[in-house]
Length: 495
Image (cartoon, rainbow, N blue to C red; front, side, top):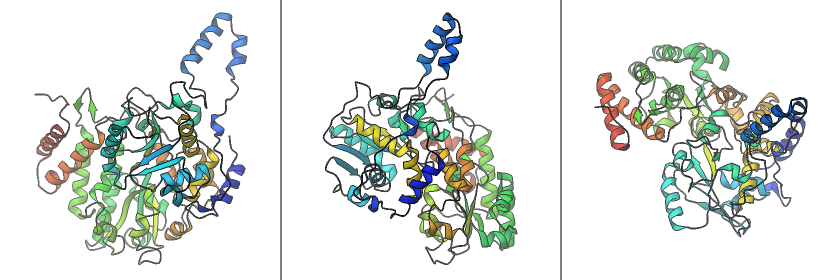
């Protein structure tokens, strides 16, 4: 494994470059996964001490449970193709990951002028629109080796063996991904537990808030005190009422119902669909009642997610804080502060919030018809397994990478991931506040292919009926069922 000293030495070298990786220069970075190297088995010595029968049983058990050997590509996977083609809905990530892997300029990768053997397909659409683009690409039969899937619809492809390749066919097993965060691994597996996708990022969330308003309205001086104030949903509601009263109803504690739902939904302990039936449990009613308390007391704004009003609330004092994920700190969070030098720039901080949660994320998957299995493997290793590469990417992008060891090492070393973001947050190590949330998210056995649709239908039913419409909870449940039955016609419904 890479030592912290070796990792940080590489980070120090690469972090001095521009974030576009232009200064990767002429030297090609070879991807090599330290976690992919075979380790000597301690079981061998114990087997020698066992009886011949016990030894046979142990060896048989190891053969059944051992992960695929790293680097050995299955004979069924195509190799030697002329062009390595990677597709995504935008250019936010692919060019930078390829640039670091190959030692190229990211801008040149984005416009396909960097290397004639690499083709980047940029659909230029929102993430939610990419699925249709992929479907058309598959129908066309055009070249495609690797493509990127968003969390909300990744399982559509991960559960389809004709659209995604099991990563063990590339020789990538558990040892290559030993330190990825648990929830990202669950999302990357199909319904049979086969790993089909892997993410280079952990999109853990937190509560991003105005430190000056927190001091004025809640009397808190630092993120630890803020966390104590809003550490669970009951505390969060109480704090929201306190803020509303102290501000004369002008300031809401939280940004939007949609943002709150992203966090709250990660506390669910029952799958949305079991035995092909929709599950509506106490969790659903608890959320609706919590949301109503915040809605009625002015503890949450009525702004729509992604609207101009949503962003502007950070500078006009109508909103104290936002539920935001790691992807938001470099873009949205700065916008909500008015940009560098803006009205509230430097007056922000982040804490874990009332609920460990994630928001978003992207998974790398491989087309089973790839003719570039070696390149697909090496690209995935560079982005998701090679610790030195991931550490460099964490600071150069910046990105909260999907490797707990790398992130723990960087955070404990007081790494400045991005000076502009750090200055906006009063010098706080903003990723440190999210590290525990990333580790605590648990989706084992909870993920279904229907989650994105059901979650959207539920929040729409709650807002339109329970919050705005004054409906009873039972009436809201019926409206929720109606929405889901229209969107997912294959589910069974009790008469």
